[in-house]
Image (cartoon, one colour):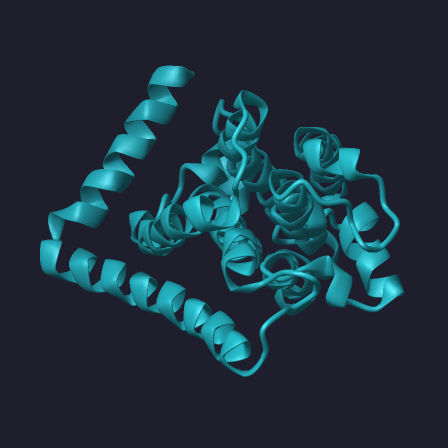
Length: 264
């Protein structure tokens, strides 16, 4: 089974890089997306000094951690939003006949390397923000910086799977699903303290966007959340990722059981 997945991935990657000019343009386009998002943060702090209790460098740390996590998840799982097209065309039925797990086939169907352009921008911002925002380094903080983007990517990957599973009922409900995936990504780029209490609770305990970057950043800055939440939550991104993964797996299995085929 592992050999089959390696063959599929290898074929997809070779196909993307065979036309180098086109690949370079796609990569630059994603770099441009990352720069536009960075410009949004810049414009905000051009007019104010503090947002949600964070200054410029501290807010950039949240932005960078969030974008690294989302771009990595988008690289491997973002194309799951193509599932409605597979459902309407009957392509999914053919995948179900193959001796490989359906989710594995979908994930390996289109690994988009161009999305690494957004990752590159976020890494540059992180390299700038870390030395200026974090004063006292400890081994625990270094571990947190390494683990947080991985856990955040797992959170977003689980959200992509949940959004895809929702399509087994909605078929053409991509915009509804995007409210949780891309909406969660947008919220995670900013301090959660700026949100209304209901939205803050939703994007912390239902869609765990706050665990992706904001809460870990407060730990790195040796601060407690101004919203009354315990500071220890900043270490819980891996737990949030595991919880979301369990929910996503259960939701995906339920969607597969509900699916009756392109012909109904």
